[in-house]
Length: 82
View 1 (tube, rainbow, N blue to C red):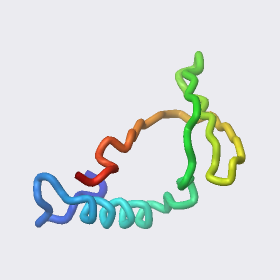
View 2 (view 1 turned 180 degrees about the vertical axis):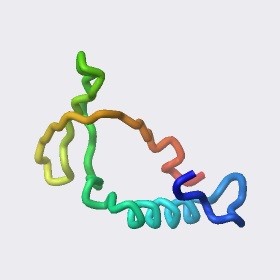
View 3 (view 1 turned 120 degrees about the vertical axis):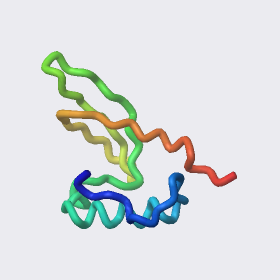
């Protein structure tokens, strides 16, 4: 694994522990410039060459689109605390 969770992490880390890990991961691999926060993906389109077109709207209401090699869906299922 390229960037494992800390050795003492529980099997099911808390949201605070995961946030700390994701922040460290993004920093380690220089990913922050590639992340769009407060953005809603409004459409995804599979392309004939196996890539994906994503269409989004930013928090300011600006629409954009771009083609990507891969797509990872993170639906936010565990976003709301219970």
